[in-house]
Length: 119
Image (cartoon, rainbow, N blue to C red):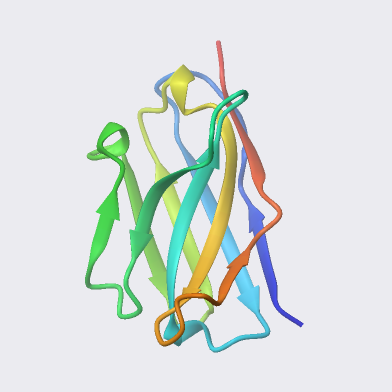
């Protein structure tokens, strides 16, 4: 059974930090590109950050560059999103995503974790 379980969301003041975690199981994690998406109220889901299967290559949404860092550990089947200097516009539900390197039509999603940035 495939599972992607996010944690680490919560309420933080502007300028604060959070670290999201996504622990996975049920598939060969090291063969999957991992990403974080987010969906703000009334908006479409957008790609925030992604990381290659080796971890050597990352990509970020322009608005989070320099503030967010995605990382992974293939031994722990886990991906993280370190979020610093959070802004109110970062408020969203954050989703973990896994996409097969060999078959890009195979995609798994987590259930999401809420991030609220407010004073």
